[in-house]
Image 1 (cartoon, rainbow, N blue to C red):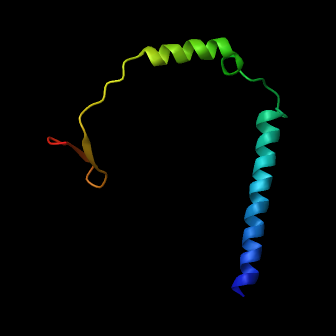
Image 2 (image 1 turned 90 degrees about the vertical axis):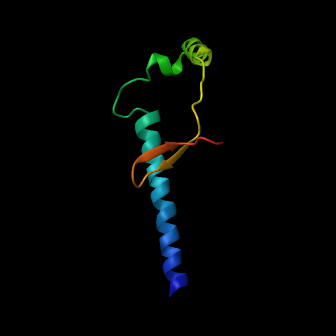
Length: 80
């Protein structure tokens, strides 16, 4: 029984992923509802200028932190 049901489950998962992929491609890439891709996403010069700006920002790390998501308190580690 498990082998038969596994066949249907895997088949339905593969089918639903295929339908999701095709739907996403048609809606976002083929633009069936109209619209265009913004210039900032397609312009290589804009991308290079933005990337250079982000790379120029200094990256400063803080001290190590122990995170406790249950109590929502974070503790700075004194001895690394």
